[in-house]
Length: 266
Image: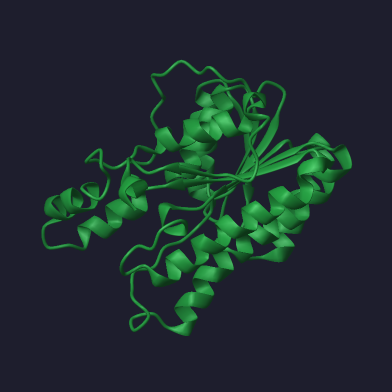
């Protein structure tokens, strides 16, 4: 599920007059977050390394009369990150909410993972979060206001079999988030991360197609969660909406688990 459909839920939290930027917003969780933020009246910068996917998200937002624009962004490219920050500062003067959602996956144990695999994962999942935050944080500090939401994973809190490189990077994202929150708590900047369990995203759907029996594989993956199903992208997006809103003003440095009970018995 790509998160493209309009939510049927009534939004409680408002992002009126807030400027937000979401990385990896061309599909899945990122697209759902961008669309939910726009419905909550934020102006959303939709960024993705795929122009086609990013423009499709913008089109859905604009069809609902929301405000959004696309910025091409490879989070692993420092120069692109700097240009994105310059554009946001020039056109909107500030950024209120930064969502570092862009990320990639890798399946494998230590034996099945090469150094190149780990480097590729690190470049996007860790260095990408660092690169984007690095260019937007100074403006937030100058304005003594900012809200950073990083997408980690249940795999950043507990180990997941056959996901060595992925878990390594997501544990790093949790640590980065907590350090960021602690360093800048008294300077008006909050930082939290969301740690989802398995979510019905295009990445998961593609993985399922690789199995001899996709339905059986889905049921096995869903069974990991105590609720017996995967999350919908919109369910993660609504948690991001809460963290982005002023109602969560006393929350910083947390790893927000949305895992369907996966970690309850750990």
